[in-house]
Image 1 (tube, one colour):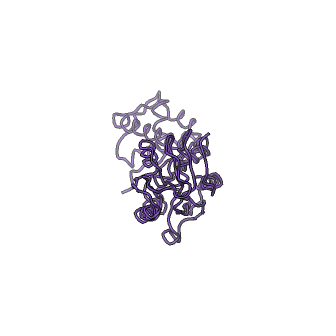
Image 2 (image 1 turned 120 degrees about the horizontal axis):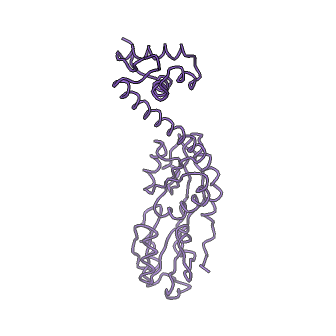
Length: 296
């Protein structure tokens, strides 16, 4: 038994015949001959085993079964037309899916939005480094910005671009007491957040430097805690710069810690990956080695 499946020309013929009431008019609209259109329609009816049109001296009109199928055919063609339009729009305005860790998200997504908003639909995802890398390998993300060591990065299936280093800096909120220039952390409450490494080990180093550390879950949380309490904070430079306000200061950290920041891009040529490659110089500027900054 032949398959009853219908292709797009079949559906177009059914809809056109129903709309015009004439096989000849339907044939002209589809740019085929009338005998060819009539033969095709008869074959469709034989394949389905139902009569779809009543034929008369003045033309054709759908049977009850024909009306049901024509309505479904019309909807199917409309869905395909919308899909084609969306595909063309996507080619001109592609979807670009990028992930990063929470502490880098404000800086990274702001930089990407400035460069891609007029040219692409940016989809943002914030997660831990390893799930983001897996999402790139699985195709759920086009790229991810992570702070992981070289042995934690995939060896195949991606391209890796070093964006720079994201050193820890000392954040001083407005109204914070002046620093002891020789021992800036001595007897000072100090909020700590790292994008990579062991935050507890880093906190122990802060203790040895004389500080009283409290670990924050994210850089934004650490800055909010510092502003509310007037305490110092040790944070990634990119996050501190992205959210530094008037009267707040960013100084070099007396306790050093630097994380490599890597852009991991799916090794699949596409409009999305090409656009991401174009943003690399702008992302690299986020991780400038200069750590001293004040908000004017």
